[in-house]
Length: 396
Image (cartoon, rainbow, N blue to C red; front, side, top):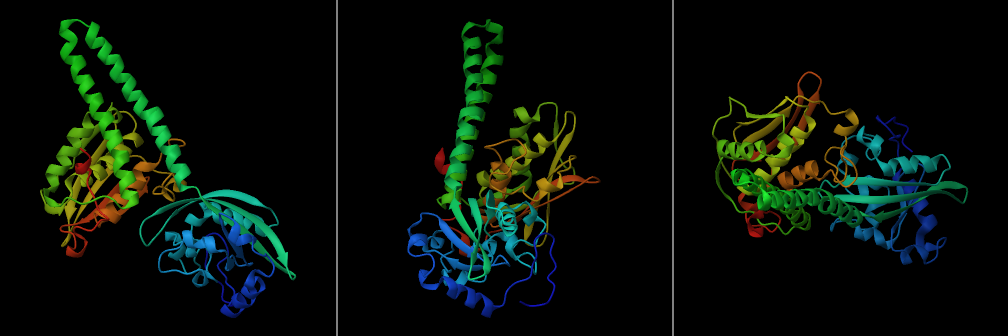
């Protein structure tokens, strides 16, 4: 091991040398110790050394690796590095050594097993090469081989299970509530006095819009994650997009007793993008901001330009807890309960993978919370028409 002390904000950053990794890997080579069992198991199996580095993997690891990786290439890496976690490459120490890693289920389970305990945790990973979200269940067990301590780590991809839970919540809770409201007002319309017909009809029209919007949001997200969305690029005025977003969400239930306004310094900027997809992203930003507000508070939206991009932003006076800030873009993380948390994740997914932009935020006591998306004034010609981008226009 290198004697150099590696800086860390959580787990130790020191590593074994390449020679030590090779020696430890030979302990498991040819499956001498484990027989054929590892490759017969349906989940990924890793063996980690005392520095949390991989010295053995079974063939199922291929299901979680990028196309350019091989099972041999991950030897010496830590789990987050092998799986392409965005945080695994943010610091000199690598996987396990950033502030965000203090909330990682995988690191937590490994550290527990280094103390001699078996552990089961869940873990959410955003992958840096394509923005894909992985949701994993991790089992760790300490073992001793030839007098050396190792950790056997079993990993099961539960992304489909989490997606199913989210859809069940949305369709059994959110959409049910809107459908129930539609039925209620339709009954009033049928029995109500003539002077109430227009009022009830307007409410029914609004509820129908909410129902379609909720279903459309899930269809977009499902197609975005599977890479089936196709961009419809057109010239767009930034001011027009912001005004349309305000008009849409000023009538939304989350805006009740709250103020939504356009920043007075906002000017019109012409960009080339997918209007519907851009409005979906801005709408999620606005909805999240309104939900974070108390009654009578104001959400402000606006935009500004640089030489080759436009910056859209949404501000609310609230402040996110540090724990929330570290997990805000994770797919199933939410402060609103199980089965939620898709809004912020979809903002990042749609902006960075499809609109070719970047997402960031600031949140502090003095300035409140501002979410920002940076979008190119015009997408790179090489990305136009590729099957990785998309609009909801094909769904309507």
